[in-house]
Image 1: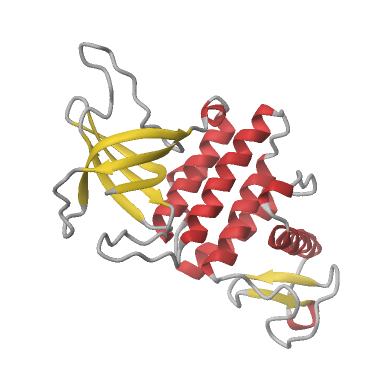
Image 2: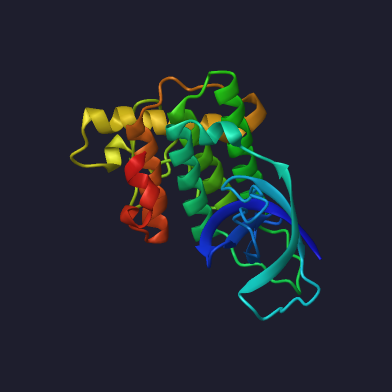
Length: 257
């Protein structure tokens, strides 16, 4: 049996082995044991098992379908995100992507083929590919890449807020007249909101604008959204965390962003 996916987690085991987690093309996660995966040895063999690399993996002949970890007998590199590894901001952002994916992607059932979550793989693979490409072209914009990942993820996960109407009174939203209401899971017009501040309206307007943009714009056509700042990105992440009941402290990489 052969699998293809992106390595989103790895852990050292014994002297030369690795335990890794792949996000497969169908949007599910599988844990694999790689004998000699760290490389080294007498021949000083290198390793292609790096976070963000896409691999083709052949499973061992004895697949244990009720086991949490499968044995990888062979593995080959399909694509690598080498440029991301040489830029610390891009690397920290990619590790945040991997942490996010590990929280939302379901485990692989080797007895059942289900492509219902393939959008998760599509978003992550595009996020890595076009971030790597932006570094080569020297047009990397941190906030755009983080916001595009989060925005596209909430649409794939089905938790996107209504960006056209007030979540309270359903009136059509007008520019600069609403705020993002995390508890209500949407935007609220100023008539339905008490004690709002001008800064909140400005930040919410930019979040709203970016959600429109990332919803209708495919990755290959994305351009840097210079108006975005970390405040808007964090507002959208707060929305996601509230929806799932997450604490931001659960994301080790988040403090580095």
